[in-house]
Amino acid sequence: MDSGLTIIEAPSPNFDERALPVSIIVLHYTGMQDAESAIHRLRDPAAKVSAHYLVAEDGTILRLVNEDKRAWHAGRSHWRGTTDINSASVGIEIVNPGHEFGYRPFPDEQIASVIPLVAEIKQRYAITRGNVVGHSDIAPARKQDPGELFPWHSLARLRLALPRPTKNLMDPGWTDAGFLMALDRFGYDVTDPEAAVTAFQRRFRPEHIDGEIDMELRCILLALLLPKPQGDD
Image 1 (cartoon, helix red, strand yellow):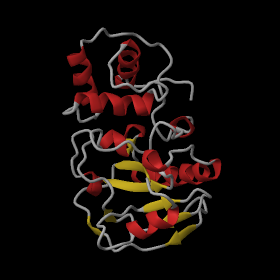
Image 2: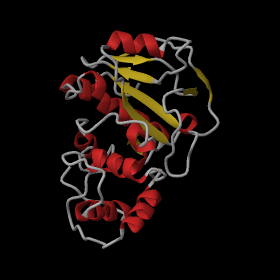
Image 3: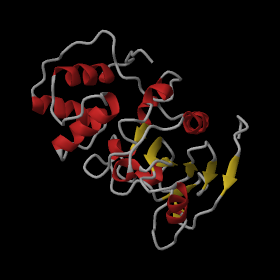
Image 4: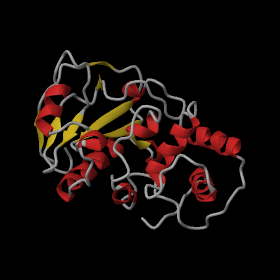
C-alpha cells in the first residue's frame, strides 16, 4: 500500500466475481457487540456476508476480501442508478456496536486508519467524493450505519467525501414532491420517502433527524446538486 498502512490478512470465503468496475466506497459499522463477533460473522461461510476491510477501534485494519473480488456487504441497495452495489464498490466495516448495542463515537485511532484507507481506495479507482457513502445512503429503508456519530467532516476536509454545505445557501422552494425528485437525482432511493429523508439527514444534518422535509434540508440538497458544494470542512 502506498501510504505504508499495515493491513492484516484475515481471508473470508464470502465473495464472488465482480460484474462492474469499482466506482463506490461504502462505509458501514459492524453493529455487533464486539470486534471478535463481527470478524467471526464476516468470515463465517454460513453467514454469507463479508466486506473488503474491517477497521478495529484501535485502528487495526484487516483485509477480508481482495478488492478485485465482490464482497457481500451492501445487500439490497441502490445508488445513482446502480443496484448491484456489491459489484461496484469496496466495502469497509468499522467496528462499533451500533444503534442496537450501544452506539458510541468512533475513536480517533480508528478514524486515523479509516482516512488513509479511504484515500488510497478513492485514488486507486478515481472515485468521486459523491460516491463515498454510508450504508444508510444506499439502503435507507433498511440501514442506519455508519450513523449520525460518524465524522464525515473529517473525511470532507480532506476531499474524501462531500462536505455539508454551509455557504451561499438558498432555498429553492421545492414542494415535498420536488425535494424527493431532487433527492432521487442526487442518488438516493426514494421509494420510502421518510426513510430517504432520514438517511439524508443522518448524513448531512445529523443533529436533527426527524424524517421531515424543511427549508434547511432544501438548502443543503440544492447546494449539493451544484457543481462545487462548499462547506466549512
